[in-house]
Amino acid sequence: QVQVVESGGGEVQTGGSLTLSCTTSATNFEDYAMGWFRQAPGKEREGIAQINSEDTTVYADSVKGRFTISKDNAKNILYLQMNSLRPEDTAMYFCAAAPWVSYDLEKNEYNNWGQGTQVTVSS
Image 1 (cartoon, helix red, strand yellow):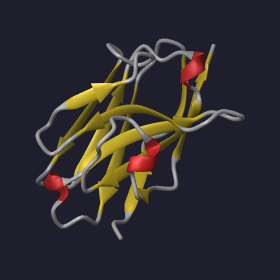
Image 2 (cartoon, helix red, strand yellow):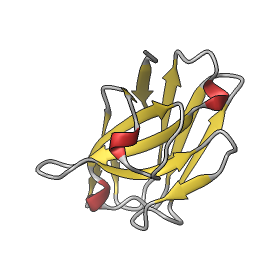
Image 3 (cartoon, helix red, strand yellow):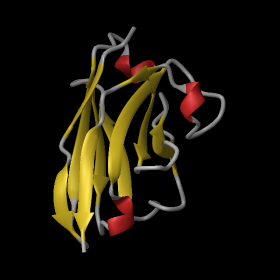
Image 4 (cartoon, rainbow, N blue to C red):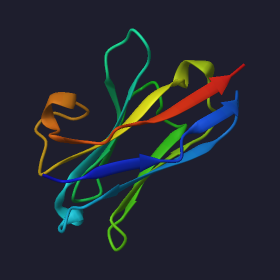
């Protein structure tokens, strides 16, 4: 089991930026598919960004052009740079890891999850 811990959440105003970080205990971090998901109150958890072992990235339409996923394999850290934040981005944000994924941004593909970090965007 891979331990996953998110950090970097907080409250920002509309149009602001935040960077989320995710550390893992994976010894072969570079071989994992890593994803960012979010869940707003009363809504299902949705996949918003993913990066695989070949550094191929995938984004949900709702964040494309505003969010950037990246990773530092030497430090075992995954990042999510979030710009131009909107009130509808308010949610609990989760980092997840999987040895591989068959379906992009699909939460059921991931078997290692963090506890989440709250992001609140005020208008």
